[in-house]
Image (tube, rainbow, N blue to C red; front, side, top):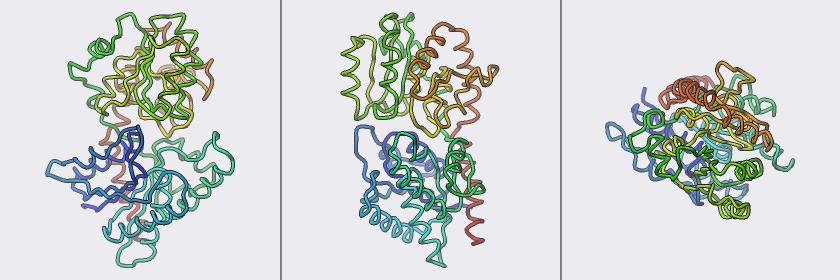
Length: 410
């Protein structure tokens, strides 16, 4: 049965949750559903998915309806939040979708509030309301008062939707431990990605071609990081943990893929440490080129302080590149440490913020080339099955069917 689906995301910047949302929209439109995407104003150096979503054409000419919500902003802003909620409510009443599917924290709260008002207020149109958790808005690095606001907001919103999708099992655990939602509301649907261009590179984007393009020699040990140059992504920890090792090993190179508000400060630190010749930065790259950059690496280093399930981890593994990562949130579900399961290990984990653990894990990868290559191959096989877009879209189909049943029964 063809559905009318409205996805709601706070901003269409280049990020994991936004890519997940756009891929869901594309996959559902290709299946014959009528798909719409609502989003707040887009700004910042992170890049945008707007053009991709707006320019999408399905196999039979299907398009994604695009709707900017002027007052939906990321920061807490009570007046704008109320206006944004009213704008979304009017959009839902006009579109009359079968499914209202919210993403990210702000859109998740005001979008569910708007969808639920329509669900409860109109007998002639009762949309099912679904939310996806891409990462918890509350975490240990926020002031207590702000965490309390976020948790209270998520509790409020959980009572205003039928089902909650987690991109990793860790998301369900964290939300339930905070007293958010009911156990039966949660279902895990792993975040899908375009696996083909990670698994099967074109000739100009093979490992050798990319190392040549980026100026790396065969003898270089390349440690890649694909993330916004922003707070909580851990770039400072890379410099703190690996500074001495980089000076000791002139053939160790850092490849930083991405841009962000902290770019100038971080590159200033690199220069002060005398490491400018060993740090290669690309700035923003088109999404279809991310896999190419990863293939130039010997290891992906992801020291983030908070995530849902970071897409760069399975993406690197799809390229056959093993991972060193902080053990935050859903990361251990893709980066499997040998101490947990040696036979199926795909990388090395260290405690969040542990720069010594970060250094030790990277040194181990450098000293064990055969083992790290085996980790990459195991990860490639595992992630090809777990993280395909097709699997995600099919998983959402089942979620929507159940959500509609729940809505019809209320």
